[in-house]
Image 1 (cartoon, rainbow, N blue to C red):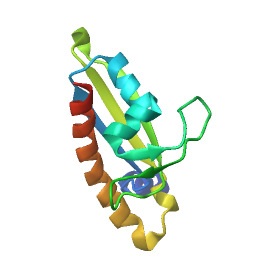
Image 2: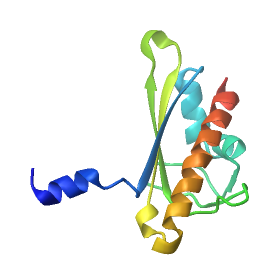
Image 3: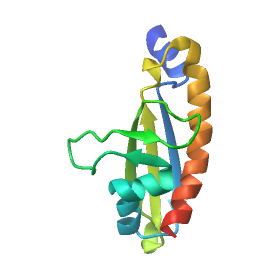
Image 4: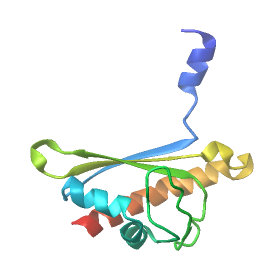
Length: 126
């Protein structure tokens, strides 16, 4: 392994947060909760200006004080074995675009925030 590859491997990932949660709901129910703007806004705490559609950008306002950051969020869903629920992987990226002076705090706050948001999603779809 080159020194550059080793350095990249040792460097902590600061541009993205990846969270996984298993919820007691079928994938179709979770999909509706994360793909329908109205339902997403209800459990997430956001007011959105339109519907989600492939390739479209939906803008909105976070209604949770202190979480007004602009980053990309992706939701990946997979059925659990035996159809006993859904694994939800949430990836938030874009932290490298936040000014360095604020980046570590934004990352820490959002990482903590996803712990709470995954609980809200699980309760909402149950």
